[in-house]
Image 1 (cartoon, rainbow, N blue to C red):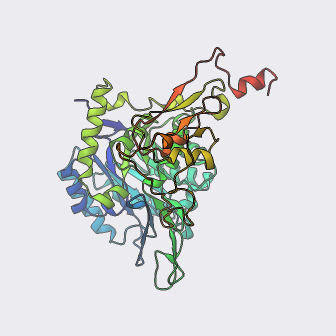
Image 2: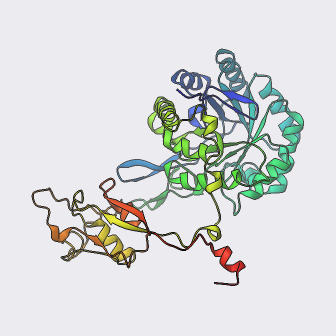
Image 3: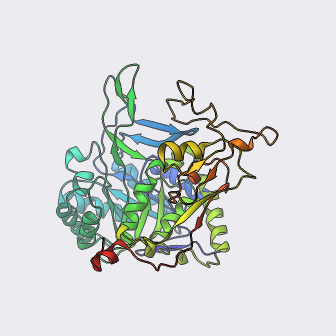
Length: 446
């Protein structure tokens, strides 16, 4: 069994799985239950001058049977007295000395930062996370993403925290920027010991078409909120990876955004994160998901021959390059296994209507896809139900095949196929060596 313990900027924990700052880390009772389940650390729900929240405050969008593909919230920082929060943080750290306890902070003035940092460190907490990411409610008050979107302000406030703090300082970044490197570099220049990202994406989750009001609804109105959950993972991976591969980012990263299982976590670790933070998945399924995360990561590391989770951290960073550095001479073609194909023709229709028209059948498409006014599409999920054939009635005429000369290796057929490994992508041999677009430009070619 591999060693899952980590050390991120001097903060240690028995494993890389932390609760992100949010509703699951709102109280001492909650955090202690999470630690009992196996979580390695927790970032306390942001403390500052307590606010008044609204109701309702959550909205979700579902997809493919999941009611929460993405979650939108208009909840703000703690609405509980600071004295209560600090007392509970003290009790948690006293009872769980081996688990990481980090306090998320958000205030306005330099004097307020000095005071709240001192009070946070008096609890015995292991570190501080500066919330520069909240995209609603707090940014209108000059905090949260209003800071995260202004590198100069972010740099200055980070330097205040570094001046006042004796424990590690983590800067939490907003994704609501054009280039994540700008705030990332500013955080490093301001003295941050680590960076965490991403916070939530500014969003409107939807409109209640019965009442014609934005969701979630507060009375007869709504507002933009922060988007999180599995849907944001690709954005989070991109931004975390962008920082991890840049030589100017000289501090460790705590990855956040759509992490729901061990596989998601391993992806963030491979792209340079030392710890990973989880919120939405806990809100959906509860604290016990960490048991599967720990087992899954342990099994993966064992299978890969890695003795420690540190052997995984950053292993994929070097493979992240710009488009202009990709090999233009590398190619793959799709191969369809006729023995496992169920004749649903999803690949055929996808290639015909949305791809490169290189998949064919000996007979035209079945009526499930053409000839019906609604094409069988569910307007709420946009999922087209495939027509399944049993082995007894599967017609060879409906089994698709690939025209190798026309296939451009886009992967679309493999992505839409409902049968695991029925469609594979096989490398096309070539005598040409590796050559990128940038290399062609350097040679005066186009």
